[in-house]
Amino acid sequence: MPKVYAIGDLNTDFFTYTGLPARFGEEQNAGFTHSIGGNAANFAVAAAALGVDVSLVSMVGNGLFTKFLKAELSKSKVNKLLVNSDSPNGFSNIFVRKGGERGIFSNKGALMELTSVLVSKKILSKLKKDDVVYFGGFFHLPKLRNGFVNLLKSIRKKGAKIFFDATFDEYGKWEVKSFLSFIDIFFLNKVELEHISKTKNKTKGIKKLFSMGAKEVVLKLGSEGAEYYSNTQTLVMPALNVKPINTTGAGDFFNAGFIYALLNGFSAWNSLLISNFVAGKKIEQKQYFKPTESMVKNYLKNKNLVEVVKVKNYNLLSKLSCQLIVEQLNIKPDSIISIAAGKTPIGLYEELVKAYKKKKVSFANAVFVELDEYIGLTDEKDSFEYVLQTNFLSKVNFKKENIFIFDLHAKNISTECKRIDSVVRKKPLDFVLLGIGTNCHIAYNEPNTSFFSETHVVSTHPKILRAREQRFNGKVPARAFTLGIKTITSAKKIVLIANGNHKSNAIKKTVSSKPSAKVPASILQKHPNSTIIVDVAAGHLLKN
Image 1: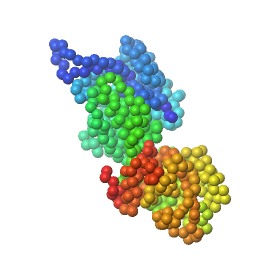
Image 2: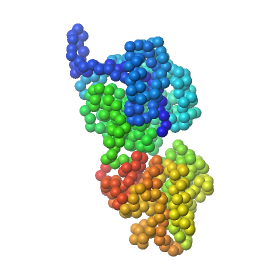
Image 3: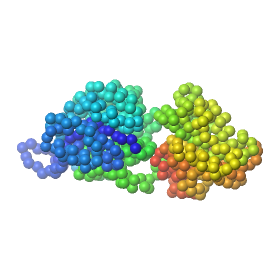
Image 4: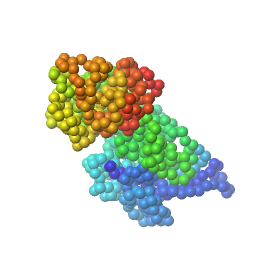
C-alpha cells in the first residue's frame, strides 16, 4: 500500500458552542472544548483512523499545546515529520452555532515559517513510486508558495501522486494556474471554486479549472453532496442524511475518505460514497470523532457498488469504453488487460485501432490475456482468437510475447488452465472488459458458476450455443476454456458493456437482483471498481 504524506497546517482548535450572538459587556453561557486542528492535521488523523500509513509534515511551535499536539498525533498513529520552531503554535477560535455552522478566527503562529525547502528536506528522500503527497491549508501558509512549483516537479520525478485541497485564501490571491497541471486530484468547495474561477456559474467554473490544467476535480457541496469531474466522467453523489452538530474538519475528513478509497482500489463513484460517509459521521459528533475502516466496511456491506452509465447509442458506448481503456494504458502503460470477443465489442475494437493510429495510445508494453476460448475447433475462423486478431490485436502494437491466448488444441486441458492462471497470478489483471449474455453470463461463466471459480473448462451445450447465436464453419465444439469469476473479479477495474433491447432483462437482473451464482454478472455489485455501460435500449428497464 502506498504511503501518504500530508503537508500543511497543525494547530489547536478551541470551540465555543452557543446559539446566541456575542453581546459585548455581558456574560453568556456556552460550551467549550478543544482538539487538534488544521487542514493537513485533520486529514492525517482521519486517514490514519482509516488504516492509511500517513505522515504529517508541519511546523510545531514552542508553547503550552506543543506536548498536546504531539501526543494527539501519536495517539492517532500519525507519523510525525515536524519542524520545530521557537514561535508559538497556531490556534483557531471557532464559534459553533446550532446546525453546525461556524465562524473561525485564527492565528497561524509557527506555521507561517513552513517553506517548500523545509518540506523537500522532510519528504523527498522518503518518497517512492505511487506514494501520495497531499497539500492541506496551502493558502494559509504564504511562505510555502515560494519554490512550490519546483517542489511539485521534484515530487513528480519520484513517481508520486499529488493531491491538493484548496482551502480558503484569506490573502485573496486564489492563484492556482501556475501549478494546477501538476496536481492529480484537486479538491475544493463551492466558495473556493467561485473565487478561483471568478464565476458563480458552477459549470463554467469547472471548465475554467480544466482550461488551467486540472486533471481530476472533486467538488465538495456540503449538504448537497459532492461531485467528481474528469475528462471522461461527471459524477454526482448526494450527501448522507445526517444532523450536523459541528462541521469543522468535514472537508478534511471527506478528503481522507476519498484518498483511502482510491488507495484501496475503489472507483471514483464509490470514493465519493465513502467520502460522504466519513464526513457525515464526523459532523454528527460534538467531540472530535474519527470514523474507522471497520465502520466504512460495515457501511458498504449491503451497498451495491457497481456504477451504471447510460449513453444514447452503440457508437457512444464504443467510444466511452475505448476512452476508459486508453486512459488506463496512458496511466499504466504496462497494464494487464483482457477484452471480450464477440459482437458487442466490435465497435470498441474499431475505436481502439483508431486511437492507436492517431498515437493516442500504445500497446507496446501492455499484456493481453484472452477471456475465453473454444476447445478442439476444426476451423480456426470459429475461434475467439480469430475475432480478436483480425479486428484488434494484429492492428495495434502488442508484442507477440505479451499476448496470452488459450491453446484451442491443447492436449492437456488441466495444464492449459494452470498456464493461463499462472500468467494472471504473476501479472494481476488491471482492466477487464466484459460483454453479457441474455442469461447474464460473463465470459463463459454460465448461471450457477461459483463466484470462487478460477480458470476452468465448461461444456458448451447446444442450448447455450443457440442463446449465444454462435454459428460454426467447422465442427461444433463441446467444451470451452474460460477465466473464472474469481479470476475476473481479481481485476482492479472491470467494465461491462451491453447494447440493444434484448440485453435489457439481463442488465436489470445484474444491477437489481441480489448477488447470486444464478446471475453471474451480479458479482459486479460487490466489486469496488466496476462500471456497466449501456445504451438506452439495454438500460431502459433501470429506474435510475
